[in-house]
Length: 269
Image (cartoon, rainbow, N blue to C red):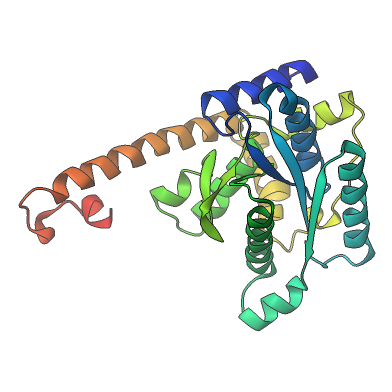
């Protein structure tokens, strides 16, 4: 398990190696108040001075948990103030949005949240939005997409950098993708960081929570104790295969080959 100083070093190394955040950049940090985003904020804040970063906090109140949602907002506002960081706060009645659009609460929440992040980033004049996704999120997403019949594009997981779904000119960066939930929680405990518990994370009406609390413990306990590393390795291999498929499709598209004669995979690309 990573010690606190090792986690700072690993995350800083990943940011530099993958150029997730360049020197002197402005970064909007998405902070829900949960342990993942609190750790992300503290790590980036600790690394900011050496990299001449300017940070701001963004918190979106989904108004799904009544007083708890409002308490999360107050907690994040106070933390940003204590760190001397500007805090952008947005809110929406996500339940009403989902009902009006005829979509799931999770989808409506995601759309509203990303729209707010994009609006805040443009207002502040930054191009990078940092999110706290970690390696456990990758594993859970793999099984969610597998169960929904995703192809290679979906099964490769979240990239460390991707365009914002609300504004392609903005980039989402995920500095914690190489860190596990266990390591994040240990870091928070070691540094005695305060955070908010989200009771909805235990609500098994949501598919992600059923995957997290029901499916994965069964797979780890009864089939593959090393499941996490197996899936993360598979994600890397799928990413390599996707890159090859894209390059091959581009090569074949330049040849005088009738579309119906192309391999099925090339047609899909």
